[in-house]
Structure formats: structure tokens, C-alpha cells
Image 1: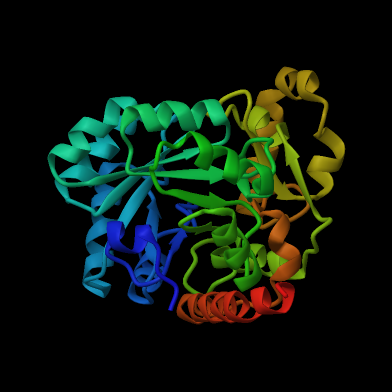
Image 2 (image 1 turned 180 degrees about the vertical axis):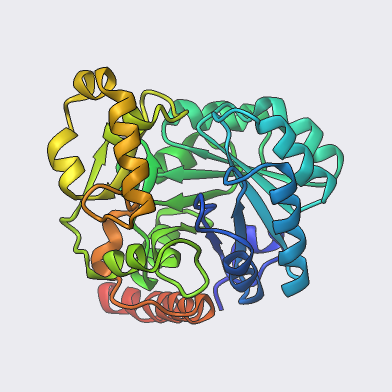
Length: 322
């Protein structure tokens, strides 16, 4: 049975955390992941404070297992959202795209753990100094918003500066092979988004899930086009990994022109999302889409991830060592 330090720290059975995907990681998915032995994170920046409180309580109606809330910490309105999570005493909160230092003491004071997702070694150093409980090293293969460091070299680099704080790997992990690989790198678990996007419980449009299943590993692009068009609140050194479409073919790399036409392009994107127009609406997904061939219940995804990883870790080393 797989068991790492985050299993004890977060009181979970399996070292798997489901990413707080905005608009996708709502109560149904989070409850399903946690009930199956992982750690589900609500995408806490999707709605306002009362929406978040409702989501937290909906998870508790479905399971008594631990779960948390993840935030886009560079976005406006963060303080009110964090306050709801602390008042509701979720097991953990996660911060991304901002220095977590201002939020650690208040969380620890009420017994809430703090996870920090980082995209640079400098960010990992800052998170360690802040006293977070877990550092998530996010590689560029991740879907959604991410940096430019590859998962394979970035995870051990973060472990080297974490000062003993458990490190979780994110980016391109969709099956047991990926889970086993990051555990062998020294990570204490995997943070998984895109694979759970293609689950029955994930929120969002059915057509977007279908696109994820149909896409291959060559079909994603890390771009600033959507963030600039929508004036999104992300740091300049972060991009959005999406499935390639007509919008990225037209606007990727033309940052100055996108900024100059921001209002026009934002209206175009909003209209595309409302019309389920896959040519122009973004589908945030990681390089691991090529490993995903079906939409399945989250519990089944969890079971397969763990079973495959355990089998690999039992059998593969014996075949390599003589």
C-alpha cells in the first residue's frame, strides 16, 4: 500500500491531491476524491464568499473525509474567501501565484494546514520560509496556469530547498506511471488536475471533457493570449496551458496586439464560452491529455492510479537491479 508523509499530515489513505480547478473542482468532484481516499481541493476562486461556504457544506454532506480549498491568490477578493475557509475549518487551504506568508499564521492558529503551489525555486524558498506545511512543485506540463520549469528537474530542485517540508509534484501526471515516477523523485505525492477534469463529477461543459479525451500530447500550448485578452490576474511569468484551437493559432505570441484589442477579444472569448464554441473558448488542460482516453468516475480514477503505481513500484525495480 502506498503511504507517504502527506497521508499522515492530511489524514488521507492515498498520496493524491486533486487540483482546485476553477469552475471544475466543485463539491461533487472534491467529495468524490476525498471519499475515495485522496484529498480534494475546491476551486475557491470560482465564486464569492457565500458560494464558497455553500460548496464547503455540500462536500460535508457527501463525505466526512478531509478536504480543502485552493485559491488563485493573486486574484482580488482573496481575504474574504480565505476567511470563509478558516471559519469553516477545512483541513487545508492552498495558495498559488502569490507569496503565502501573510496567510500562514492565521490558518495555523485555527488548526488549518497551508499548502503552497510554486512554479520557481525562488518561490519554493519563500514558501519554506513562510512555514507552509506542504509545497507543491508545479511543472510546466500542468494544465491551466503554470510556469516554465519542467516537472522532472523541478521537483527534485524544490525538494533540495524545502528544508524537510513535504513536496508534492504537479504537472503531467495522469496515470500510475506518473505517480510512481514522482514518488521515486522524492515527492510525497501527486497533485492531479487534468485527469480529474475528465471525470464524471468534474464541473464544466461536457464538450470540454470530450475535447480532453480526444486530444493528444501534441495538442496543448502554453500561452498568454487568453490571460491578456481577459485581463486575468496572474503574474507575468505564468502562462495558461490550453488545448490548441483557432484562437491560439491566431493570437499566440502576438501579445502587444492582444493587449491593444483587449476589450474586443475579451468579448469574443466570453461569447465563445457562452456558445460552447471550441474554436475560440479555452479548455485548460495539461500535456498528459494524451494519456486520457475516457471519462470515468473519480473513485475509479483514484483506484487505477494507486493500483498501477503500486504494481510498478513492486515490479519495475527488481527488473532493473542485478
